[in-house]
Image (cartoon, rainbow, N blue to C red):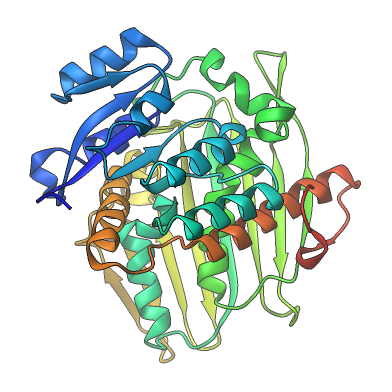
Amino acid sequence: MVDKIQVGIIGLGRISSLHLSAYKPENELDAELIAVCDKNKKRAQEVAKEFNVEHVYTNYEDLLSNEEIDAVEILTPHHLHAEQTIKAAKAGKHISLQKVPAMTLSEMDKMIEATKKNKMKFRVFENFRFYSPYQYAMDLINKGIIGKTERVDCRMWNGLSALSGWKVPLTSWKWRFSEKGNYKSPQLFDDGYHKHSIIAQFLGEPIDSVLVWTGEFKIQGVVRHDTPSVVIYSCKNKAHYGTWNVSLHKFLPMESDFYACDEYVEIIGEKGAIFIPGCTGSFFESCGASAPGQAGVHWVDETGKWHSKIDLDTTWDSSFINCSREFIEGIREDRDIDLTPKEARYILQIGLAVVRSIRNNFKEVKIKDITDKP
């Protein structure tokens, strides 16, 4: 292997800007971005110029044929992942795949089989697990500070537009509203992968079932968005559970450098609790003294004493840098890379169960009953 791992990126949509930025010299990844690919040639050329990338492609198979490339990041729509991942493995490339990894469990299994057979590293890029406050919260849980986790609540707000941040045209989201690309679930299946992932991690025990309720919000009065919605994640011990409550509002003064949304996570243990305000956005910054909590991690121990850790990097883009570093270091150290294929498959199974619950009149669905499609 060369001094630096040579990386190619396939797919240059909106989220690619954060993947690309991770390879800037100041982030000190032991890797070099040498190739980009997008079916939009103009877009690919613009990115190559901005990031000083040598090779530009409009066909991902041409990129995969470049023997200089050691690893690829695949950032394309979900329904394209299986074919592209399998071909990347056969081409001898390590693979970091944007969530959601596949549309079915059988697709995921074929991808896992191909990467194992060709002895390539394969992980799913799930940056929320690499958000510094969430990582710090996991350290507190692992140290037993709050005892066994009993409940995890994730509250999420979407603003119809941000006071600052990305302006994402509705046309760029088209595939997320389709059945083929995303089960017509831009919130619960696509973004949901992040939330299923962190809730499962914080709970620390297998999720046994999900039960979902969803209403309907029509963007511009036409396009159906699967919000408001509530997901309940139950463990075998029903006293241990998680919730994800998400809604979309026109009036929210959403502050964000990225998508017009933000989260607030509560983790309740048997002898303490952790509170994490903010993640994707900075919703509370404009509240001043009335803010529910400064960005960072706050917790109450078993004596009832408050503690805070606010000298963390709470910017959402830092989670992408941390996640990219995990990929490169995992290749270097020849070890498992989070999310591992097994863990990623489990989170996918939860997501498919969520879709089934919606389509079965909001009935409870056992995770084990999802064997392939929703």
